[in-house]
Image (cartoon, rainbow, N blue to C red; front, side):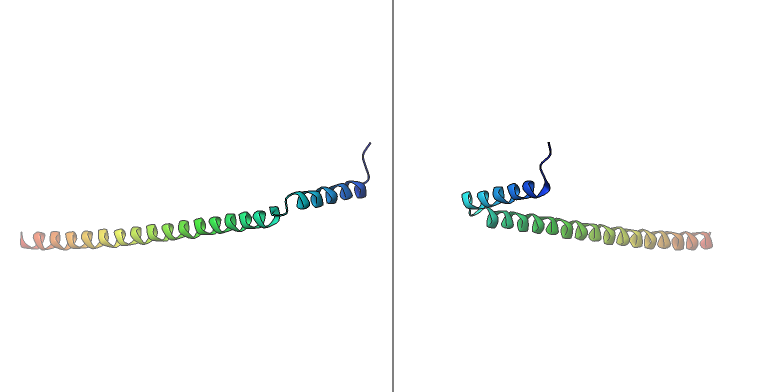
Length: 84
């Protein structure tokens, strides 16, 4: 048979209290680990975004350079055709 929710909740609270009594440093350690995990995830997200931004800037710069080289080649070809 299933126990009523209140009895189950009381057992859960007792278990929590017992854990806190047996391991009094568990809560600060758990909070520290939680904050450390959140910090690590945030740093990863920031670094990932920064690398993506740098890649986009490099792509843009490479596109500009290739366009400039193409324009220069076209103008040189036009001079050569005009001279012939």
